[in-house]
Amino acid sequence: MAKHIEVVRSHNQPLEQVRSKLDRLAGEMESHYGLKFSPWAGNTREGKRTGAKGVVRLEADRVVVSVEVSSLIPVPESKIRSRIEQRLDEALA
Image 1 (cartoon, helix red, strand yellow):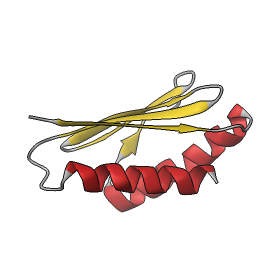
Image 2: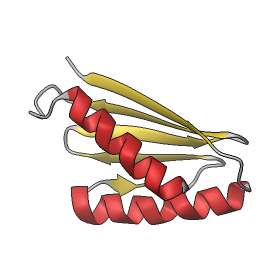
Image 3: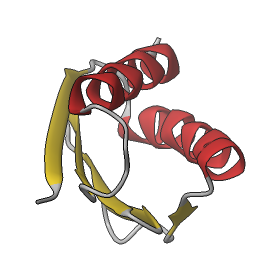
């Protein structure tokens, strides 16, 4: 069974500034984890790799990251969630 993880972070920055920060984060995720991200479709961007897929949704006052990870990926859900939270917090700082 797939692991579903959702992380929500508030922000009070202009959308274009947050989008730029999320683009930098996506680039890091692509090079480090092999994730491939689609271009932005409005305020939504999808990413995927073998065994994982996710969506980043940019809203006026928050960012929502939803990820599904295959149960075949032998990493605990808590570790994945913690890493997403950490990277997102760093990116939005």
